[in-house]
Image (tube, rainbow, N blue to C red):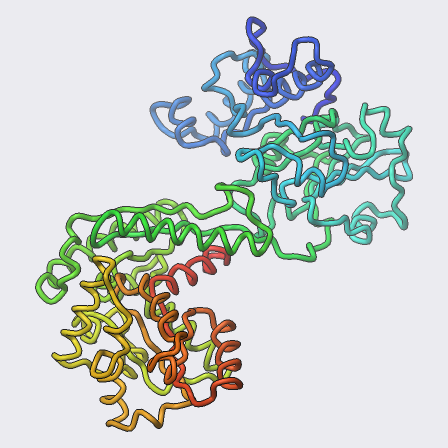
Length: 561
């Protein structure tokens, strides 16, 4: 099914206007690349999938009454093999459509190496380049019978020559020389899978291209067009289904694993708002920013296509979530409905999405329900903070006390987003402290929160520590106290608390603030403070919303369970 790019592969081409790729590339009619790129375009348009690989929509259009029987599938295959099928002119009937299934794109300059191709390919966000595993590396070898074997693998892998030699039944592999490659109109660096397959020209596609578990859903790869200015991108698995692999086109494991694991997003995310749509949007934006930062650190960010698909919705029926005492029963009924919808959607789409809420109060209501739903993974403050605390424990960093700054529902085991070990170790609140926390939350909502409301004598921290230590607060010197900012409004207030404690005041003399959810950062700062200010009480401020975003960011880069 492959083609010689110099001769073309049939198909119906509109001669009255330039094809889309020619317009997109800005090529003049006399550009020397036109015949070669036209042949590539014609080749892909002439490909067709076997009936069993057609989409349900396509099959319904071809067989309106019912799905095809075995006999009907045979008739359809015979029809596709006929000249009339190759000459069809209805774009909606194309099995390989320009854009979704294949495209022709430009490079900056004339790159020669895999690394240069990665950096210089214009794709979607033009300045971003492409992922190394999208570049198709093609290597040609000669065989003892004077034939040629062309190996195709992802750009971040190398040919396993021992495995290939064993598969070919030869003792030693010989690279194809320039003279041999010239017969196909290519040279080293422009070998590609579109060269005609014959008994003397075999193509082997690496198993990682087709069957490897380590690939994203968008599996378009880029190969040489034969002109160093342009690449051809195509869906490799769909392509191989259409070529109906023969002895001349096959799939085998002929590559070595990459030195660095591929990093890309694998999981969709669902963010549900329980309060204002603005809060939900802001949390989703922060979540995407967190994922982007993680990808950039791994040198795996290539524009917006690299990040997760985030479905954000603000449900008006959850608007009462701030008062879970009053509306708890109604909220649970609605969450049960949401859970059923999520389960149906996951089963239909075949994915395991990560689900979270932007409202801290809704985590307390929804968490116990969503943790039991099959087909999704719920991530809330409890999961995020426990993950951090487990890592700190493994570094021998323990918390002497836990201070939870939240509304009354945060202390109720039936409504708290922090149920479990976190709530069990929390200093219980009372009416007086609860009033002070409520006042602080209201001040922060208006942007008027002051650190003194937290630090000063007879204020929140003072009252809670005296209660937790039965008045013996001095015994906490040199120890760690976890402070959980259990209301969304307080998370933006954390920086002010850290800045205030760093000043030369009463709070600064007694406390050292560590504002982080990262175990390594916390461990490093604990060690530093222990060395330079051993008598200070270390307040470790954790921001649950950020911790949720950071845990989700990590999970989106992991394989679905």
